[in-house]
Image (cartoon, rainbow, N blue to C red; front, side, top):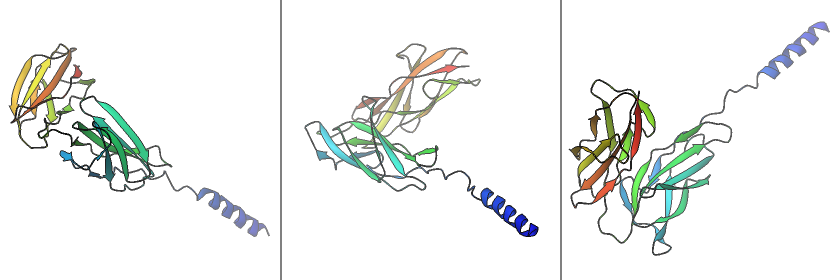
Length: 227
């Protein structure tokens, strides 16, 4: 009888300790589908003279229960968001404006999240030509504090255009806000330059993108501090 009691106790202990399956799986980033990257979206449904409804689509992401779509008007920097368990969602957005869009993946059993790539597009309007997308600043990030090298700080960005006819980038860099000092003008293939800096100083910079037709776009002003 004593042996049976010991076996039962051991069994209960093993049973209580065997339910730990580890942390829940983290969601993965969604793969964007439509609107296409660096494109003109012409499939919007007209709502008013200024607005159309665009349907955004993405592929299912592993370990994901819900998706949050974020669409940002690059002219105003005003975001719109919508959450869904589906792999598509529709939003009413301004015609003739450039936008970025991305997806945040979440899991009901996990605090972890995952973010997709961010794609740019123009929502079709009445114009027949488009300004380049505002340059996307890569580094230094806005509000960051960076360590300078002997040559200064690397300023880098990316540029894109629906028609693919970017000609130059103008980089403005200064201790004043807004920066009005032209640091350099680069060609369409050069999206990096050096800025001379002093320790402890805050700097402001922006990039103007110019295409073959003279259309211009402004990245907006970004700032960083040097150690």
